[in-house]
Picture 1 (cartoon, rainbow, N blue to C red):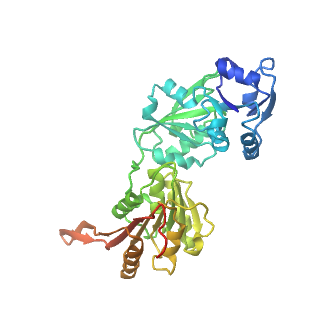
Picture 2 (cartoon, helix red, strand yellow):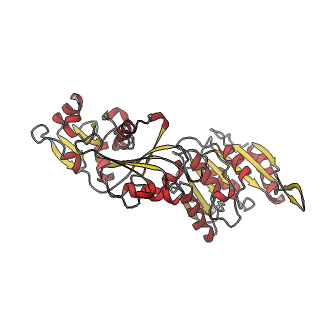
Picture 3 (tube, rainbow, N blue to C red):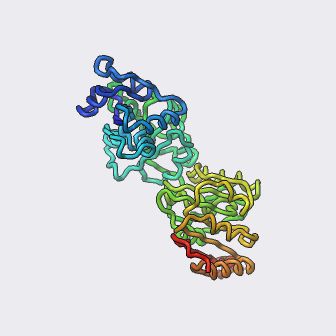
Length: 406
């Protein structure tokens, strides 16, 4: 199977190998817009528009990839937020040949005069626009992939809602094609902008609140809280102990207001997280915080561990226990659920919780750390240290190969 990247310039923009692949194919799959770019006399293969949903056809193409002479059209670079990556995952790289075209990201950076390595690409295609928030830092240059004629307006609304309405915003339509157009404006002036459905948005962020991606956001960055929040400095230590890595999954058990799971996702964009919380009133707060801090993909599950851990799907690479640590069976259930080689971190502020993690360390090893933090605060007309509650943290890793019980 050959995946051919095609731009708004259509057939004229394709190189020799891409043209030959399409001419020799017995079947060409793509969006109707892409199929209409192919000349009838040059490409005689049967043409199949993508159905909705796409998954059944992807499965069929992947199953027949080694035998069928099929070409699949993709926008620009098929491996940059494109269907090429989906097909390679499904069929295996050995069964898919990819012929890329310049991506919309590359073309946008060229039009803007922005170095690609200094520009962040954010795809909002089939994603909540609030995912943009994670990238909103003053001075950052962003190219956003969007969907539909209102895509630029959605970007503008997110920017304006987060105090970045003054940000220069450029709408780039039909990049690389004969109908290419450019509109330079600001986020505040683009709230009702209607563009060609095939467009991207370039933003140079100005204003707004600067939230770094390093763990340890200010406590008031979590806009919805009832006080059940791992405090800033302890949170930074905790996320560092959890160590988010590419494509890893976290279970945040007893999530409270979701701060650990949210910081995990902000630190590693390819990671996933599930926040498990028994109190219904906190579930909405977790979702609200996730939206406000640019990680709307956070999965929120109502339930009390350990029972709630059943049916959560793939074994997690990391588990954080922030609440309910003394619940009978909880630590054992988390250990059993954890992927071999995964990390488990538990925080507690009670003597009973401390007893639980000391016992767990005796069984599973790891480290115990006592975290004492104090902040300068007013004492009458003077200043003194006001201590937070001491936190005891247990951090351990599950062996990649479990030793047999003696």
